[in-house]
Image 1 (spheres, one colour):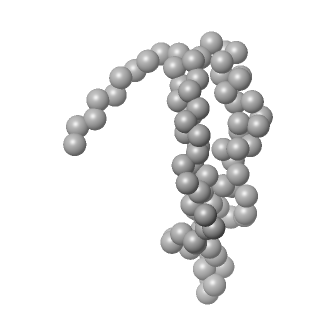
Image 2 (image 1 turned 45 degrees about the vertical axis):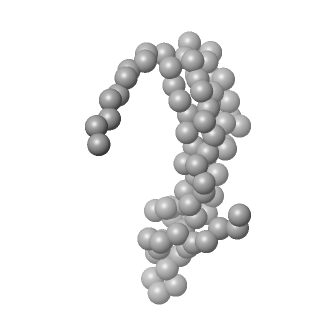
Length: 80
């Protein structure tokens, strides 16, 4: 599959990817919402960028491995 990348200076698309994969503590999946609440889009607009926020992808929550305490590599089911 060929993909053509078109550069559009001064245009930014925001896509949140809430995930706890490879995290050492709970809460990293909240990062996209925290960046939005901190005014990321507004600050980029103030810097002269056209910003389109596409929202978040579905959250990917991961569970601890019961044997080692390490983060597991498979997703934990999340409530819909």
